Length: 289
Ligand SMILES: NC(=O)c1ccc[n+]([C@@H]2O[C@H](COP(=O)([O-])OP(=O)(O)OC[C@H]3O[C@@H](n4cnc5c(N)ncnc54)[C@H](OP(=O)(O)O)[C@@H]3O)[C@@H](O)[C@H]2O)c1
Image (cartoon, rainbow, N blue to C red; front, top):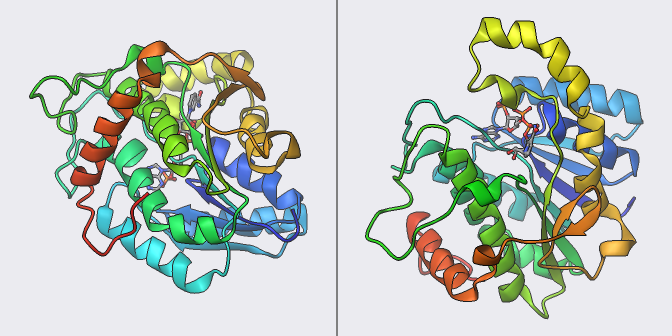
């Protein structure tokens, strides 16, 4: 991977941090797209020290802000000659309280779907120029618990039900991966998604009372995968020759897994793509996939 450039979102902690470290070990250049720059710089220094890889850079990215996504994409397009792998790892599971992003989108969906969607479109030219290249999307095996109702007048970007929106956003991740694959056929850019496993990370704190989480964390740590284990499938999809020609698939434990029927519907994928383009306010001069 010494000649490759890999961009990973959300690598200040958890699976993203372990993925950044795993990929840095392969010798690739790693771009960390993070919203907390201070923490990201600290993580970058630690990864540089543990891997001996000096080609790790941090760039500011808040996926919940369309403006930040545009600024980040402009920086990457200006600074980089190539981009071999784009890993959408960042995510939140904030589902106890409804929050709306500065762009008027429900925050979980803004962070987990709309930000990554816009970022991919804005980086598509550099990905195509770097082909063969890959887009890797971290979803969750709980995605079938969500859905996107595109038949009613309900606006799925504002839709909110406590605990439910995380599943909806992860459903969107799979629906979008499959449509991305259909649109990228013949381009040399692949698109796959994955479930990392149940991993002991900060994400479990989001909906758990602090004291309860504090008491439960030793138990959770034993029951759940470590971050290094959780990063394996992402790293596999980003680096392995075995999947160089695989696209439009969903992976668990580094193996292709079954996809639920409703997400495979191309008509639904197409409709959702169009809706997403509208929600991220894609302009006439923006690239199209
Ligand atoms: N843990 C599991 O069991 C599990 C299971 C299935 C799927 N997943 C998925 O795995 C991915 C990683 O989650 P994790 O478990 O490793 O959780 P985590 O430790 O909380 O890491 C989430 C990362 O996303 C970043 N992030 C959050 N909001 C962001 C934003 N608006 N802009 C940029 N970065 C942002 C966080 O940065 P800050 O430091 O700034 O907060 C952090 O680096 C997520 O997509 C999650 O849905 C996790």
